[in-house]
Length: 274
Image (tube, rainbow, N blue to C red; front, side, top):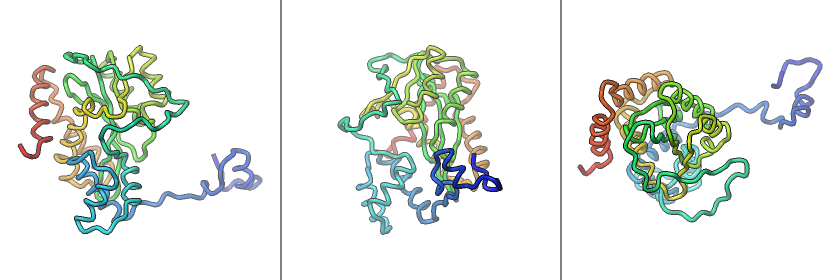
């Protein structure tokens, strides 16, 4: 919206008219250092093994590996990656007044058919130089990845694109379940669901057991694809994910058969001791 080369209207005046901070006009994002990217890779790998690690325990883990890091730095990197320790917590945060929180609808619900319940989640994906975020939409009964998108920011647009793509390709589910992340509570996302009369369900704090299927997907995807290849660019990562997800989603199998195969496959990846 700001034209730096406008001769008759200065940048200061343009910022005043648009109610913008002038410093933001000249700001250019600074990429993460190689040291931070290496730490983020280690944090991500350990978080898959111990998702109950908060910033304090993660700091101790990195120090045991020989990295001289402080808790504030680890906390900042984990926040950038969207990682939060999974354990029972008291409800201490106040919901954003503009974002409605929907009730959890899956308690004691028998989920036994496709398009009954879909779920969505976002994860961090490291590359050789940098990182991206991935959102995936999964059918709870078949464990099939219905749609996915990559983004370099944690905004809501790539989540909305993935949702619309899944709805066009597979129809509408009865229930759509997510966590209470701002990407999923924004009216721009929930309006798409409500317009199709899809019931919205949201995990509360401490609901991590009900999100386990898509967490298994993240674990398998990272260990079998992302960590093995160390992709250089976003286009390489996108192509690699497309191939891996196509292998993860055999189109020729009946949903009931696929569910059995996927359960066996996921459990083998989740339990290192086995």
